[in-house]
Picture 1 (tube, rainbow, N blue to C red):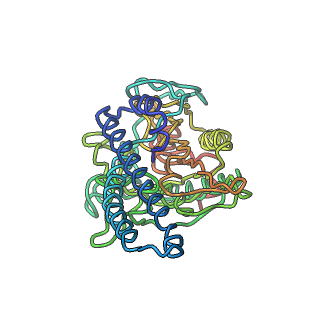
Picture 2: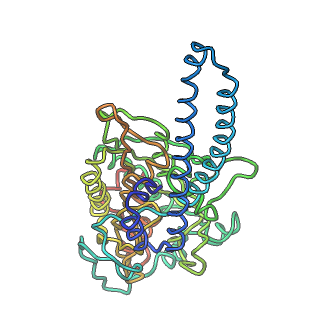
Picture 3: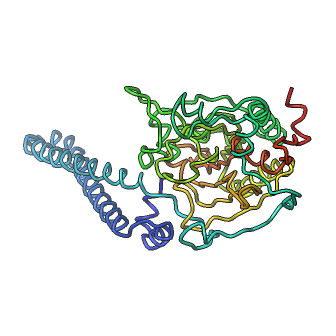
Length: 415
């Protein structure tokens, strides 16, 4: 959540940053108005409390001097009644302010390039050289259907569109990739966790999926539970409303989970293949850091995911997202895009973000520094999306007959 105190202190700075992320200036004006009104009302309420305290302190003197205290009591009671009205008004204003603030995205970091959308993103680095084939490389769905390792029809029959069933080498690769990713991450210092695949509304508010993105979540009927869209939700909120030990920071966490998304805004996109599914496997990295640690940890997470792709012999590139393409919670994001020869283009396979204080403010994740509570920085990133990595292996390591060469690092993981 954005810092409302900073908004009150420097509205121009906050509004200028949020306009770069496409926030409507009318929303910002409303936020400013309610923020200033709530602040003024609270000050009035505190003034009444001070006046009440001053009158209350006179009881002793009145009794000592033998004065009638009934008039003093009446004055205090009148102040109490007015203060109750003010308290109700402040509570309503602050609830309205909080509701607006909950729907406003994070401010982009000053280092993020300006832009309206993905066409304005900046390629920072290309890693690996795309393979030259002596035949026309096929797309993963053609290979999957030809070799019968990806069954689209049965996936739809079991559930509905955007679900798939894997068998044979595809199923084994899916399992192998999960184990390999977790082992790779733990060797880089990430502690493995096994977390629930469901989360309550408070948890999803903490990382920013609620209230804004409820339409993209699968809700459990008659329960305050949702299927998680990413392990970022569970891992980050392990420390919801906690003051973590400063000596343990940074905390580096990794976990495998299935992920569930309605893909509400993706109608007509990637309708073939397994690039965009309602259910997919992912291994996630999350970091909880002190504020002066997050930049270094951000680089470490990017390199971890990139080195994973290199170890799988998958050409890819690092892309800096512009202001207009940043996610809701992100202050800065680097995407890793893997080369898919069947499609003849790069596709996102990992998105690594530093949310800075944004999620920690929503989830109340803090640490003590000289007896003062400080908001942590939180970071998250795919390491990696398993289904998309499977796609990349199928397309990059395909043979003309449809068979697939298994990357060397995975051979010990496939039995």
